[in-house]
Image 1: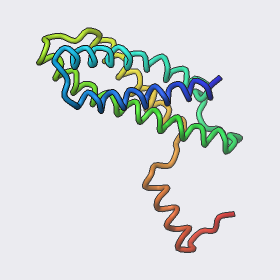
Image 2: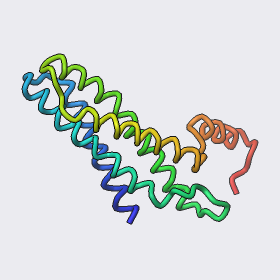
Image 3: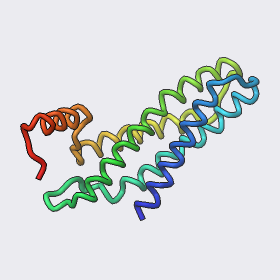
Length: 151
């Protein structure tokens, strides 16, 4: 059931975002390195989770695709972008942890997950050519200016 999986992915993304922010604060070296280590392990799991979220959307947009599916695809694209944006932030934390402790386990798995999520995001965007924020803003401005009517 894609809806449940999406909700789980969205909540896990929110939690990871919060933890990334918290790790910016002051912690003892041991707490920081341990937190980064746990974060790396958690984020490495995003590959499988996002694969399940995008699974039923593999075909891409079709002429008969209903508006609800398109709206869901927008949400998935947004979530993929949020997850993708986490990787560089966590990579920065990994670098700090390595400088402090000399080692963080699971980096290879983390990098594999990052590459897989990036591929998923690009594949999803190619199959679901959804308007970017600039297009949406321009369209809204055109409607507001009376250039187009909403039916």
